[in-house]
Length: 142
Image (tube, rainbow, N blue to C red):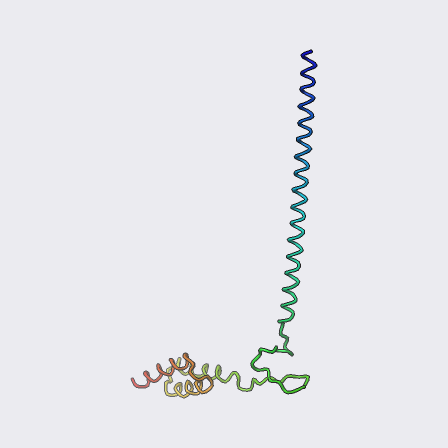
């Protein structure tokens, strides 16, 4: 009789272990499915954001033939299909500053002074040209 009770006890433990293993497998499957769903949702969201970014980048892309509406050199010429940039003399300031800086480096103060003054005509109140002009005037007085 004792053997029969032990057999029943072992069978009950075996059934309990099988039931527990089945519950654990079910829980693991459920967790895996939830993770897969979350990953799929995250991927879909990432794809959506990437598509939105690509669309925004496409809208903001400036081609050489279309400098965009914010370009200061873009001058509207009526209903013409082409835009004419108004960049004539746009680099005059940079060219003048470069020439003045070259004269400054060569310590040719008298020639650098009018060059910095000319740069100030292109870009009034420019702090760089103003400070260089002050330095040149001090060097001329020495």
